[in-house]
Image 1 (tube, rainbow, N blue to C red):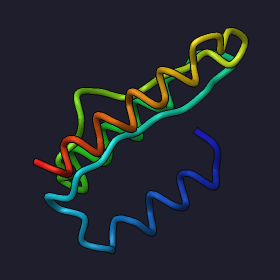
Image 2: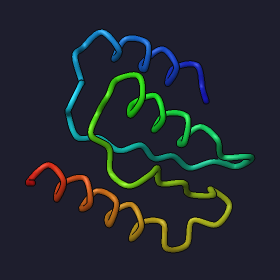
Image 3: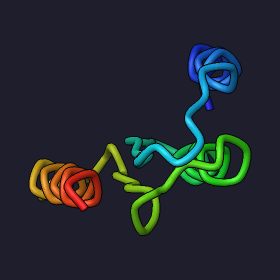
Length: 82
């Protein structure tokens, strides 16, 4: 996970996100653990109401990634709508 994302998560912890709907996503070029770690932080530390899991897109093969991202965004919106 890049440092700026770690900083953002540290700051977000203080904002009262418990129960808010969320999702985590990322494109990666190597091992791809960051989206899962971000998701777990939002779910377990912030106690957010997360969608089914993180969206992980391998940056070297983003074919179809736009559709996957749109579908993921739709899942978040539907969860927010109830």
